[in-house]
Image 1 (cartoon, rainbow over the protein chains, first blue to last red):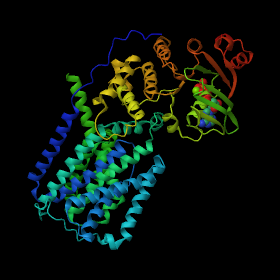
Image 2: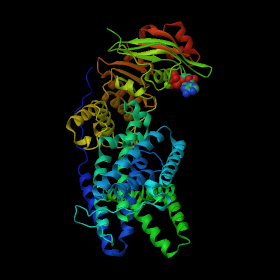
Image 3: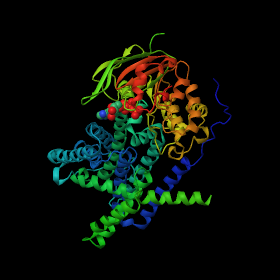
Length: 334
Length: 254
Ligand SMILES: Nc1ncnc2c1ncn2[C@@H]1O[C@H](COP(=O)(O)OP(=O)(O)OP(=O)(O)O)[C@@H](O)[C@H]1O
Ligand SMILES: [Mg+2]
């Protein structure tokens, strides 16, 4: 039995794009960072906070956008990173910002693994409830362990040394801002690699049909746990950045509110895309800052309306919808 | 030849309904077996039981001599027991190249790699293009699955299964839902399956069954009522009786 005549061979794959898009992504982040620095020199604290939260939203995108796990407790990973970095400095005198960041990364990853062990036992709504239970437990733990965390007064006494022993954390927040931009750029580049890797492809498959993935001999839960650890490392970086830049850690870092806001930002920007996570964070936080200053009584109303509009009319999120629009136009013009 | 796949006294019921009733069979490398039976006979349930997707009430499953009744579904795939689905289960947003690439990487234990792209891994891509070419899917390698015809999706299901290099392949109605005009390609793919692979195919299309199988097993109401040569199946009184309840006349089987 011979094969039907088969002269066709697999065409060469559509080339280029991914590396170029990485470079464009890095350039866009750098341009936005520079623009922020030039346009709002007095507001670097806000911009640095945006960077820290952007890391949390990126981390959330990894599990929610890329793997399909909905969670309302992702600040547990962020907050663990923040407290770890803060405690290293305040209690152990480890003030090197790089070591503090490393502490945040490790603590975030461990918290991620812990959350994964609990959450991956359920699916759907029960899973969402578990995530809420987890963030309450983390919050309560931080509240009760006040000799370590400062409890509801917050953790103070964080005094990071100069970066590389040279760049001091100044009152105006210049150093913190550049430190944050550097962390975000590094995280972005590494995550681009991860989402394109075989592992990223496996996760996309799990999101769509975990049973099919099992039939291919791969364990969805093992992969999801691994993604949770990676996500924890990223969120922990954000937490560490927040601790280093503000030199305090408040219980908010580990709150349900922070978790829910991160999810709102992600949906706003668009799930399943790193740019979407970044865009959502930027838009939400700038909106929050300016609208709440302009109209403190109605800012939440406006956020609500914006969110409803996005979910109903641009379900792929602001970035996702724009990207789809330009892709379509690009194809039409070709 | 020693059996590569054995099922002994497998039983399963849903509530009071016995769907698999004391099913035993054994297959050797290279076997081409067709599992037929009226709708609701328990064929898909049988596949779910032996692959570990559904726990049996009692009975045993052995793969290459090893009892795997207590091994989970993933472990059985890794030991070489691979199935396809009655309704295709593919990733709509992924390409055929990605499907086969993922299966190859998974088989080699590299699906967890955090860097690199499989498109740049020459050995993986060599295997991907070989398989896709063999199944006539080369042209569609970089299309999204949602954009390709159902018949081609069925072929991709087979490609994914083959990429896992199985020892035993269970095909649940590989031609279901495919227009008659397109079944030729699938039949060709079935004819080209590796010669040492043990294949059990569930199928309703009797022409396909007779051309493919060297052995036919008939399941009715969860029980094996016939296990023998294709030539004998239509002569069997119990088989005719089982089908008469479902088809207008038994000539369908003939
Ligand atoms: N999870 C379940 N719970 C209850 N009953 C089930 C379940 N799965 C299957 N059944 C019943 O078991 C019987 C056998 O179903 P099964 O899908 O195995 O049949 P089949 O031989 O594959 O049929 P078909 O040819 O239509 O694919 C049917 O009566 C079905 O309704
Ligand atoms: Mg069936």
